[in-house]
Image (cartoon, rainbow, N blue to C red; front, top):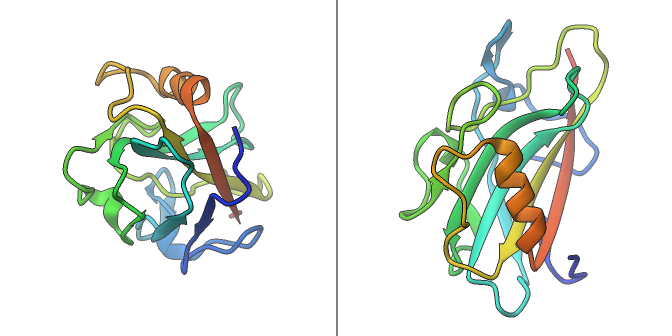
Length: 163
């Protein structure tokens, strides 16, 4: 499921480094701008017919991590998402699924105060179908299962955050 040429970059995120306040959630005791970062990907594998983007915090104090953003059915012609795309300005045809805040938009970082450093995994998935075979009301767990089951390749940029 990996392709050494498939890459993900962002002018707003740096691998292993702290995210800006603008990527912090606005709610749950956080007061950030809740702006999704710009994401750019290159060298998708042959056979890619669509992309998906997910943001996941495996360090959340839950039994199942915390989903911050799930977008599928991004056209194969796309090479990225603009900064702020997570507030309803995705390319036509994309589908968003409910995150663990209960929204279909980008939900920024908001780890509990004093809980330490959390990792935020921004992952782009290259998919062999134009549409992910999941119902529009599918849970994040089902979407994740489908992505893992059918992905041609994935690439992840991991940023951090703490309060």
